[in-house]
Length: 177
Image 1 (cartoon, one colour):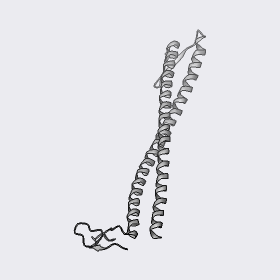
Image 2 (cartoon, helix red, strand yellow):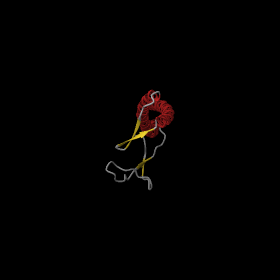
Image 3 (cartoon, rainbow, N blue to C red):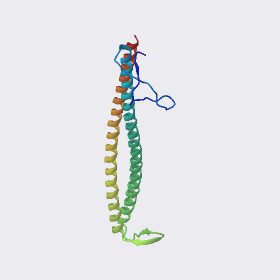
Image 4 (cartoon, rainbow, N blue to C red):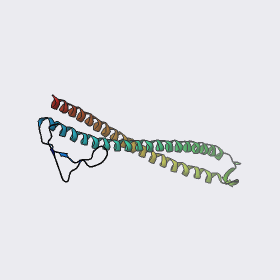
């Protein structure tokens, strides 16, 4: 509105059809043009902040997907542990019997197996599964903390963007008054 047109040899803003505009405008800090500068600066800052928030939201979603995967893995490990604990209980029942015969399936064949070896194998498998459960639970706890911290950051950034938008609107309103 109150900007003075000048011909500028290096800065040529584009028109809406993409062709260079022959006239550039000075942004002399008059009362009415000053709020346009503030508004443009706030828009650039808001756009950059929105890009950062979008990136953080994308990271947040990725963390949530990873958490779902880890929870699924934990469920699988728990089922394996339960199954192996039941097998161990059955083997321990057989331990008191002298004529107990234990078979181990290898591919399509059943092979006779020593009862003590079978019990040791199942106990080692349980130790391994329990170790994996502990690792997965630790990983889940870590990912949940990361997710929570990221959620707080996103909320703070969105609140700051809303506050900046309100301040920009007030500045524009004050400039128009």
